[in-house]
Image 1 (cartoon, rainbow, N blue to C red):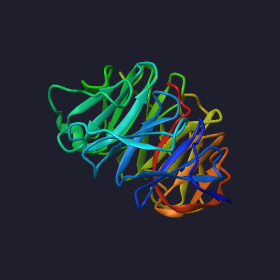
Image 2: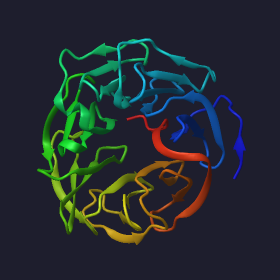
Image 3: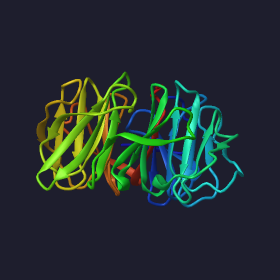
Image 4: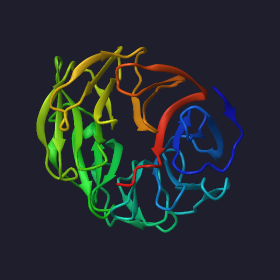
Length: 303
């Protein structure tokens, strides 16, 4: 494992936040670069222009963007007060969308500099934990509200198509082509998976996870992978619609941040140890340069 000083990071890259607020990037999953970004509570996704990463922050009153492709200079924008729960890019719309967890207002931007605000706030803002931009829509996991909301303009969000009743939605994942899946805890003994093939507009039940423990989800190498947010639980599915799952064992506990990058699944927790796997079955332990606990974004998907 090698650590390097800050350099201009080329595309594609994986960006992960640390417990101190410092942002780290990697282009190979092994060598990490410490950037000039130091923003606590970051939440975001890239890229609208090559190398641009937009950071919404629950601790800041403005979004931050950094151009890692062309410069190591971090640029902060003095916008209206944004305390973002999530921020994401949707290539098919050519927009970033940002949702303010404090007042429920949402914002859209083509470049991360000029932002357009929604006319009204929405009550689900405080419960937003995840956003995916794919196939002409932004899809939001309103975990605390046990529902999924979507928008086709990055500002106006509507709840519908899928709800989990009084239980929490765990995570949403996209295969990069046409299919999304969402995990939810149905009861103390059942973990359910729902599928959507129209960018989160409608959902249908497709299968069950091995246990009811909440899972973080990701897709890559032709399969879905799930890692339990507690216990040594993991699972994988080679079904295109995640209809059937096979249980596997994760080497540690409570790794709730899962993403796919550069041919590998990456699992993070509030630790200096992260794990990688090509298939969700065999996991390799790696040492990070800091306590990495917030997967901010992967720059390579162009959905």
